[in-house]
Amino acid sequence: MKTFFLSFILAFTIYVCHAQDGNVRTYQANSAATRPQTDSVKLQIVGNNAYYQKTVKVDSGIKVSMIYIHALQFMAAKNFQQTYGYEQEAKLIFTSTQDLNINPVTTGNDLDNVEVFTVQFAITIDMKNGRYRYTVHNVVFFRPTENGNMRLTLYDMYQKATGESRSVSKDARKVITSFERYLGSLTAELHEGIEHKSAIYQPKF
Image (tube, rainbow, N blue to C red; front, side, top):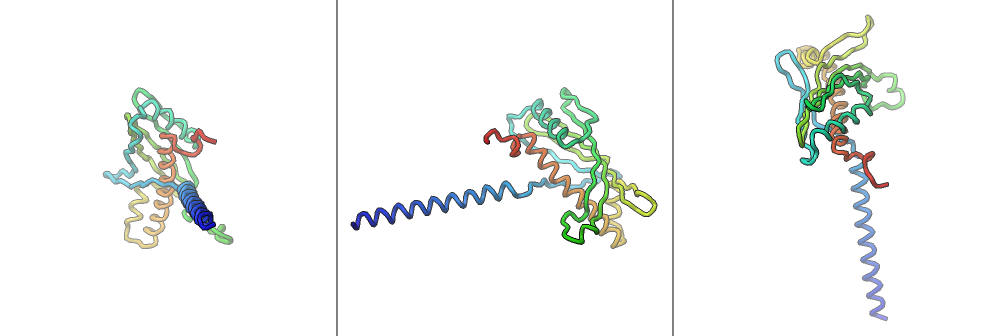
């Protein structure tokens, strides 16, 4: 009887530990799956030009031809307009126009106070075996005013963000931050798309 009781306690302990381990792993997996993926984008200023550029390493086994195909598929799925693409030069160029919110999180009456702006830009993807480089350039912002849309390049917006007027610089920084938030998500998804790590590419179902 004592042996049976000890065996029961041991079996129950193993079961509880296994269940707890399973719960922890499930929680971690769910957390990773629901955590928003973003890339770190950094504004670069060269003379009067403002742009974003980053070299990204991928699996060393991914050759230029595969990076080219995966990048083309991803950008097409995002409805980007392809303006240039030549695999032999390992280069792709796309353009897009996006309507973005300065304040992405809104509740209730805050919906009436969402500040929307339009941005046009191009993104060039240069490829080599095992890596690629994206350059976000020709960025132009359109801000609604009483007299129509005001056109500002990324460099213009950078100058306003670093200017002396506190209210103007604050507003410009909000626009740049909103755009960079969007770019961070886009380029992170591009990386996943090129490596086919996104959930939509998983073969198991």
